[in-house]
Image (cartoon, rainbow, N blue to C red):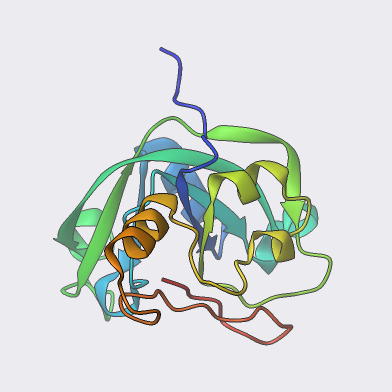
Length: 178
């Protein structure tokens, strides 16, 4: 079965993967977990891309893979990771994102400098042309949801109403937008 391809208007959630064993769970089980209390303001994205942390060696601080977001559910951590019943957060709520097949980027989207990044929302057009993580950041008018902009402009919504959050990306920022 052919996996859906990213379209310019698609929403992409870039999510941090701290350790190779976390990525192995993504690969083997087909889901990604987010603690509900730390979840970004929006998880409604067509695709999830994975930003590797420092423990990935030569693949660190880059996006190498993405997958279609096929939906989500709220579950306890212990239900996701039953082999860790004594974990301090075992009973906490987690958002489980169901994923399609992992797709590898032809060229990774790299961070030329270390960046502490948890979540970053971007658009398909930015993701498809990005060479560096900084290229994914949306500046100015906020998240470029074309339907939202058309509705806002056509309906006379006051600028600032319903506007998503945009956080500038610098060397120390935890990036979370939307």
